[in-house]
Length: 134
Length: 134
Image (cartoon, rainbow over all chains, first blue to last red; front, side, top):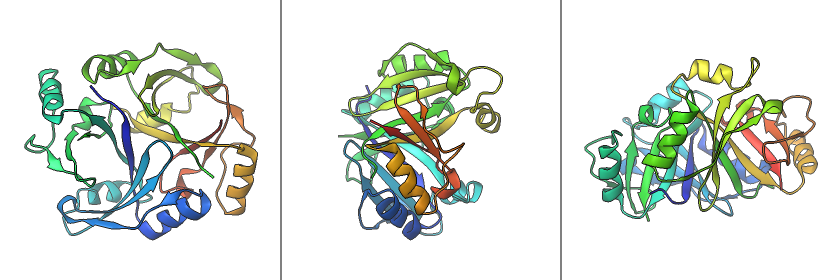
């Protein structure tokens, strides 16, 4: 079912500092900040040759990553995103296998303009998993 | 400096269950367990089309992931690994930029038979970063 690793998302307490570190210290290709109000985050994409790293910073009062940063003030890896061909088929198959889909189970449009869903971390070895239809 | 994302490592409390989940529920290509006594872990590689996920399980009394699993009993993302062309040059450049290299700073041979180093999570937005020379 899952295909490529689309991205690894890292929540950071200082977006400028993290971007500078990836650009200047690690020598990676770092994009410009993009506000994603529907997701409550500002995102910076780091393009690696085979996948992406996404730096996430809270946007607005109800950002879904605020709690994570409260618990992990230095930041940390927030989720991983796997690509699927058909997100509704993937959702139904995962539910039938007993996995919990977060929210109302209807895909939202993610930061890349594609439908996404999140799976419950307790069902996936403590890892928040995003599925993105490509 | 950094190239491809070589792998994302997930520490798991039950290696069999995690492997079955990736194989059967997520439909990924899951390898056989490999003991890595020098690193204190048993590893299962999951081959995705563009990178790997590594499931880590403690091996021996002094496993470096035991503390992580004590803190995160459901498991969780333990580290990410970026490829570099020259690990000693990368190490020296990172140290010059103020980043801390873990251990004695000398590369060890990692689970793929290549030289690896780990960078201090506090210097990289709370993320344990492994560098692997390819």
